[in-house]
Amino acid sequence: MNYLRKGILILLMTGILFGISGCGEKKTIKIASKPMTEQYILTEIIAQLIENETDYEVEITKGVGGGTTNIHPALVKGEFDLYPEYTRTAWLNVLKKEEMEKDDQKLYQQLLEEYDKMGLTWTGLYGFSNTYGLAVRQETAEQYALSTYSDLAAVSGELVFGGNPDYIELETGYARLCEAYQMQFKDTVQMEIALKYEALKNSQVDVINAFTTDAQLAANHLTLLTDDGGFFETFEAGTVVRRDALEKYPELEGILEKLNGLISEEEMQQMNYQVEVDGKEDKEVARQFLVEKGLLAG
Image 1 (cartoon, helix red, strand yellow):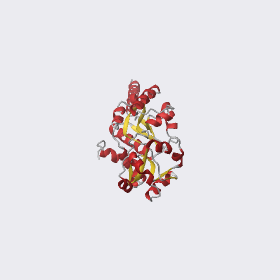
Image 2: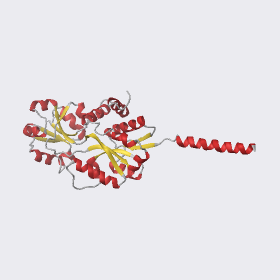
Image 3: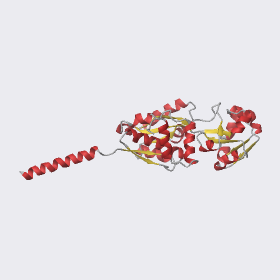
């Protein structure tokens, strides 16, 4: 009888232990990022917010080679749960659309519909767009009273444009820009991407093409002009996530939605600057941003 009691007791204890280990098992959310500073910061913002508000663990795979080309198929397979993406990158590289929808809201709605068929969705947009822009030195902006592309067009004959060969030679790039705004620059200089900012700083050129969240815009105190004619298409950033991940992690959707409209272009630019120029860790920069926004305790 004692043996029987001991056996029952052992079975009960084993069941309890298994139950405890099962209940205590951590759920891990897997996040991917493209190989760029901006994405490293964004994934840290997402991860820290999730870990602060839930008991979920987060695993970030930073710098996936090929970006969207490799992350999207892995997401569909379930190797990742979510990642930051840009609307028109998704339109071109995921949906393979030949014609670009000009209206941002219509494009986003079509993305939601198409992604739903793949078992994916977008939980919203962060509030900034990483797209092409035109930058000038502050003193140039002040000298010619420049704030828009139209302002620039009016004095373009006195200025030198500098751009990387890919952009200058692109059929839909420099030539189309000049045609759209009737710009006729005094001269056009081709140079590698890494040299553009230095050339502008040293007054070798007066205008360059840039990306609106480039850290070097802040590093060199440059003025980013307003595309008043809506020439450049916007690449709005947001989170793409698997629908089954939202079901598996009930708190996840609400957390991701807290990022909607939270980050301005200037704020993203400044965060990129802190990492690329000041040498801060992306994790540190992300945490400070969340603290400033009142989403993490200081």
